[in-house]
Structures are given as C-alpha cells and as structure tokens.
Length: 393
Image 1 (cartoon, one colour):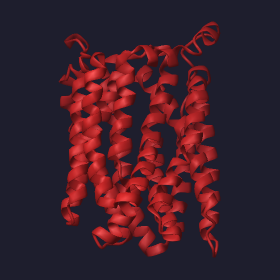
Image 2: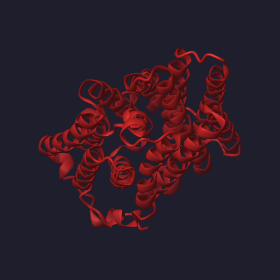
Image 3: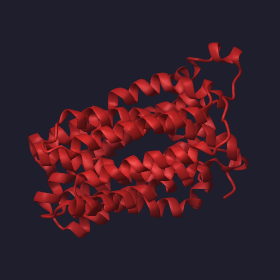
C-alpha cells in the first residue's frame, strides 16, 4: 500500500508542475494557474462528502483499484490534449479536477486502513512514514518535471503520470481484501456520526482549520511560474526546483521525525509549526536571490511536515475508529483543497498587488490567523496525550 502511494504521489507532482507550466505558457496568467487548481475543489468536495462514507462501508482495496483506474484513464485524456498542435484549455481544467477526486478516494482508503494495520502504539510512526512516501515524490517529481519539460516537452511529464497510476493499480492488485470495520447495523446509524464529530470537537476543528489557514494564506505556488521567470530570471528547471525545495525540507522533517513522538501538547506544537511556515514564506517573498528563496521554501517544507505528522497523529488519536473513513476523507479535502484555495488567493492578490506583496502578506496573515485560532479553540491548543499513550518509535 505504501509502495503504491509512493508511485502515485510521484506522478501527482509531475502532473502538477506540467499543468501549471502549460496553463501559464498558454495564458500568461497567474490567475489562470490558480483557477485551474481551484476547479479541482468541486470533485474533491463531492468525494469527501460521499466517498468518506464509502470508505467506512465498502472494501477499501476495491475503492483504491477503481480510483487508480479512473485516474489513469483521465491522465491519458490530458496527454491527448497536450499532444495536439493547439492545446485546448478546458481539458486542463476538467481532467486534473476529476483526477483529484479519484485520487482523494484512494488516499482516504489508504489512510483509514493504516491504523488498523499498525495499531495505536505506532500511529505517529505510520503518519511519519506516510509523509516520507509523499515527500519522496514531492522532491523527485517536481525536479524531474522541470528537467523533462525543458528537454522533452510537457507531454513527457503526463506520460510518466499515466504510468504512475497504472503502476499503483498493479501494486494494489496484490493486496488482500480490506473490508470495512463496522457492521451492517452500524452503517445506517453511524452514517452522519463522523461529520457531527467535527462540529463538536475542538481537536478536530483545530486540525482542519489550522491546515486551511496555512494553505490558503501561506501557499503561493500559483505564483511560482511568474516568480521563476520575472523575479529569479529562471526557466522550467528553476520552477521544478522551487516545487522540489518544499519537498526537500519536508523530506528532512520526515526522516528526523522520531522526536515528535515525545510531544504531548500536539495542538500547541502544530500551531508553532504553522507560524514557522508563515514566517518562512514571508521571507521567501522578500528575497531576489534564488538560492535564498529555495532555502526558505525548504524551511517552510520542514515546518509543514512536522505539522502534518502531528495533525495526522491527533486525528487518529481523537477520532472514533468506525468514523475514520469519513474523517480521513474530510482531511484529504482540507489537505488537497486548501492549497487550491491558496492558489486562487495568491493569484488574485498577485494580480492586484504584485507577486511580492501576495507572498509576504500571505505569510503574515498565516501567522495572525493561527494566533487567533489558538485563542478561540483552546481545547485544540491545550490538547495533550498522556505519556502512557505515546508511540514507541
């Protein structure tokens, strides 16, 4: 399951750079780059609302297989559009959006399965391993995408993307069936319990809210193509390195994450890491040196993964086992939907006030809103795991 996740994450990163570069190449608009990303919110939301229940009630292996198969077919559709003499813009909105929905179903199925496999005592370790799988793709995918696009064109990136989905499909075929953990009687009575839990729990509200704050205000990736060309005077290779720099810092965090298991105040630690993320993004926005910019992105990636591991751990600790599918689906929506809202926010602000203002103001807003969240959701800020429940890494 982790192998298939690694391969598909690798493909996701390739296609993300490819779509952003091609849309900016066609339109010359950072707003369009952000709008393409935001268009993916609709299928993401639908899958999170409906698919989360499916994860709790159907064989998760089958859901993974269906998701990989659909994603592969849609990736082929994107490739066909890219190969045309005149690329059409609307498939670059439609196909990646549908892929995002299918991929979120796969990820929710995978995440809901992990806890039952490893047990409570290894929740943080499993969360760190999931982040490690993701960050390997986050580093190698964008870096390779920049080189591939520069040498072989955007179509080559989507060939790799299609191959990654088909590989994930083949790997998942060897898994045993993964039936749901609740009975038929429970299915009817507990269908809405997962979503009600979010409204009632400061811990769950905090997990989702703090991630949205970080991604909406502090994720300026829609501006990366414009920054690479105009502020840092680079090309596709530098654009790939900018995406990869986030992944590089994230990889360091994932590989050195053992110390996170000793943290009891999970909520407060998450808030601190999100503020560090906002600070690094603000500093990234004021520099004109590409090396310094990449270093700041790496620091941001480091803080982000520490936050992500702690958020995933807190979710597994605080959520009822029978609602993990639904709550993980909401988490997937937040994790993947937040950056897309951030693309829209940074694209709009960048178009009005310029790229530097958009990046710096976003980082500052991230810190300010996190401080406000800490004051309002005190149950999240004070959330603590007793020492006897600490995972043994």
